Every structure is written in structure tokens, then in C-alpha cells.
Length: 363
Image 1 (cartoon, rainbow, N blue to C red):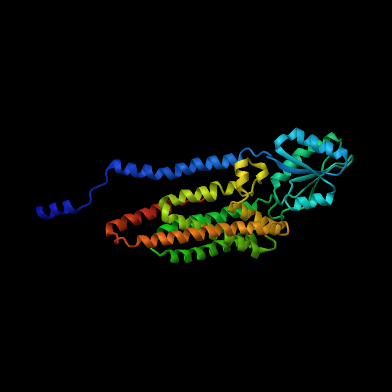
Image 2 (cartoon, one colour):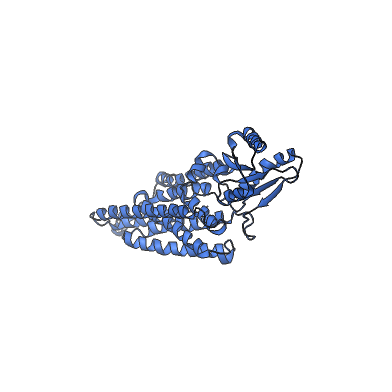
């Protein structure tokens, strides 16, 4: 090669990146996993490490001054941990349990004191109620009989399978956002929205298969389980794709905060709100993971009690996702008046998209 050709090649060859620039690039991308580490620790440990009753509703069954005195003594001893009420008879107590209004009902009896629970609503709440009333029965000089009026299926003895179904459907949904948002960035929003419908349908079929023929969590009502899987997945995906237009590579962290850190901890799948502090307990009332778990729980075990409000919760999140996608589509349409990017910018964009998709993680 001539000296002139070598000089020309040296001029046109890209300069090797400086070590300082590479380190800056690496450190910038480490911010996301470090924030995930901090957020997951705060959320999971704050919600799950020390579960304690917090205004947990329980009942003492019967009438008369003795029952009133017993209920008041239990309340005085527990303080703010319990919301103790009285119910006139056993039938009312069972109705309250199957409506998930109380965590346990104690029936005092000199010979056979009884605690009535509904462990399909929450195995942990049933255990907490048993721990509370066992000493009360012992004070009456008799062993405590525990009656479970709503047991989970034998394939899901702790009733926590619905929580892990939530985890599976959530991962399939929010992890797909990085692909649809980054790799699909060149598509119009209408096309991405169509892909969201298809992906959510696929995720919901996987969820229904896991709940039905694979792990047998749902012995009946599988179509209802599938429908709630689709509503939940579509809501997560539409929200994520809409947010990606504005947040770009920070979408993954945002999705983790919304649909893992705040979602799994408030779903009621492991601990219902009466066993959590006020922050996580309050989010349970309207967060979509709680709508999913409590909706399927109601559908499978409690005759559809309060199912409508849970479905409306999921529909509300889906509506929010559709609104975000609509706003993002209008924003992108306005931005298309800009000139087409040069080839180098396209290559840089592809590299950034690949990095974003690789940062999508499942928890």
C-alpha cells in the first residue's frame, strides 16, 4: 500500500474510544441495576420481612355481656393490631368470612371453642387469627378447634399459587415492553398497539395453561382466569409501550417500580393488607396486581364476591394504557416532521436499542 493510501486509511478509520468515555458509558448503564437493587430491597423487605396485623378484622361470635367483655379484652390486649367486632351467630360469621370482611371468627364455648377461617382468602391471615385466639381458648381451659370454610384446592395447599401466576404473567408482559418499545421503535404506534394485543393474548394463554392443565390451580372457571390474565397483561403492555415514547431506556426501571416493586408487594398474594403497613395496604385497594389476584381468588373460591370491582380495576389500568398510547402516538406524529437521521445516528440508535432490550430482567 502506498504512503498516500495509508494516510487516507488513517484519516478515515474510526478513532478507538477513550478509556474515560468507555467508563462513563459503563457507569451510566450501572445506574439502572443499582437502583433496581435498592428499590427491590426496600419494597420486598419493607412489605414481607416483618408481617404484623394492622387493624386486622376479626370477630367474636355470640351475644350477651360475656361476649362483649371477651371482644373488648382481646381488643385491649391487641391495640391497633386488631379490629375486633361481634357477630350474633355462626352463620353471620361464615358470611363475613366468605365475603372477606374478616380474617377469623372465634366462637367461645366452655368445652369446644372454635375458630372459623377461610384460608383460600389468605393462609397467612388464617394463621395469624389462629395465633391470636389459641391463647384465648387456652384461657378457657379447652383446645381450639379450627374450621376452614374455604380451603384452596389440594394442588395449591397454601393458596399462594395465584401470586406466582401473577409473577409469571407480569414478567411476560413487562419484559416484552423493552422489545416492543425498542426494537419496534421504527413502527408506527398503531402497529405497536396491534403487537401489544397479540403479545397480551399469547401471555394470557400461557397464564391460563399454567393455572389450568399444568399446575391445576383452577379446577373450574378457567375461561374467567384467562380473561383476567389478558386484561392484566394488556394493561401492563399498553402502559409500557406508551411510556417508552417519553422515557426510552428508563422505561425498564419504571416498569420494575410499577409492576414489580409496588405491584407484587401489594397484590395480597402472600400477605393481605391487614398484615402489612399502611403504605402497602392502601395500594392494595386499586393497584392492578391486587385486582388480578383478588379477582381470580374471588372467581375461584368466593362465588364471585366483589369480582366486578376487581375487573373494573384491571379495566381502569387498561384504559390508562390506551390513553398513554394515544398520547404517545400523537407526540410521535408531531415529531416526524424532523429530517430523517443519518446512517451513523441509525447505527447508534440500534446499539442503544440492543442495550435496552438486554437490560430487561425478570424477577
